[in-house]
Length: 291
Length: 291
Image (cartoon, rainbow over all chains, first blue to last red; front, side, top):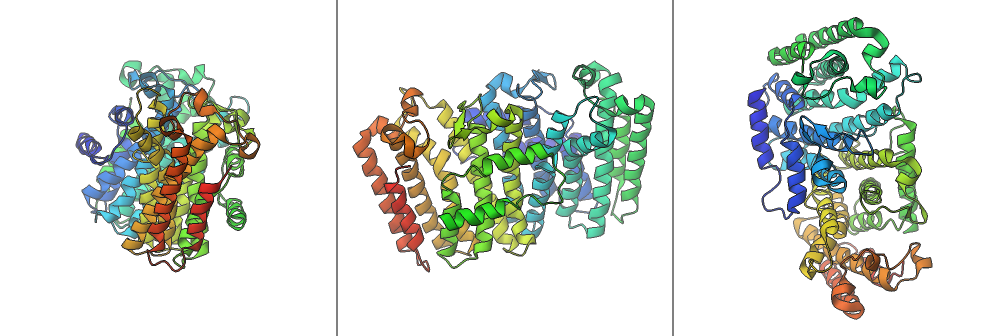
């Protein structure tokens, strides 16, 4: 995890071409949130999936950077006063608290757009064939867009205790969180030239761990340790959000995390990958994590 | 213009795959702004540039739809309370006035993301080779992103009478407006397999008419007819914005529009296109327009 985070941050330092004439405040605002850290889970998944098939680390880091840009933009917009109205993110003031609301909207827009530049230019830069680059762009737009993460965000906003059922909550979790995780695994596979069968296995793996990750988030928000999480707990209860524990209770939710993780693991264990080791380790880590 | 607008709107009706499970309110909000009309100048430029080289109308309409999605997202975010705080756009209530601020932010994010889907899938759908699709994605991300339209938007926000000079105003106009117009012409060329020399000529044409278009906008805001424009004039004066007439006066600004338009025309007149007729007519229209 540390190795990938280090390479990712090195790439961020050069992600915006030096000769580009951009307003310095915009660059500063985008970098502020990009460099704020976090688990870098999605980048790790891209690299792990790519290397499970013997793909190139260099291409994987670029794809990893693009998914982290998309994840970061979604957090910036999510934190805005009109959305969740959060003042803190990973223990630091949120983007709009530092740069103002207008700049935060534009920094998010800039990161989202630039993510596509980073993937599309993989082909011009000789790191991937045009067919692979364009397939990754298409997936990113699908999983991050209106039927993916943005759709999940809207459904989450609309979700209310009393009117939302467990099926609808699964839709929210799958799209708000799982889609970008699924994309990460899939894109890593595409960057390594996965066969259609291997892509299918990676997709099943991504769906399972993505959903498990979000249910674990629900659980940690209820019973986690604030000092380890670096944020306040009980926020779902306060905001009257629907969660897995709300419907199933803590024990059954924990069971569901384990079941999804096992399901994910068996999908990649039998997919004929060169080495599924790191992917399997990530699936285990996600079940056990306490932050 | 009417023909392209008609085909574009027909494409919008099917732009979001019917089998996609999306929150209906999100689709409604995106469609509300997409269908609100406007001049459809950028789509027309894509089609005109593509057909000047004998390219396919079908591919051109898809690229045209993507640029109009990006243009529409930029208007939705631009109108937000934290930005220009506009209640009306093209005579109709702005997106956030109808759907609320959170949905307007997400509808913008959704349209921007989906624009890349529409271009990237041109290759899977057999309408363009992967190399052409990926080059158009890369251009779109560059011209709409941090060093393009988003950068121009930030510079515009920072621009103030007294501290901004004419050179900085040119930066604002070039990026805030001209970049997406330049992209339209360029992408039409790429969709038709233009040579590097032809792409260069189209780029010069796009830069010229893009800048001329924005200066004409400045002029119309000052001396235009509100009933023809469908919006209040004098807004730049009220907001104390820097404009070309502010620096040069009306007559010199008009002269600059004509000069840029002539320069643009001569770039494509000698580029060995099959037919530059429509492009030349658009350049003339932009100088004469009163709305």
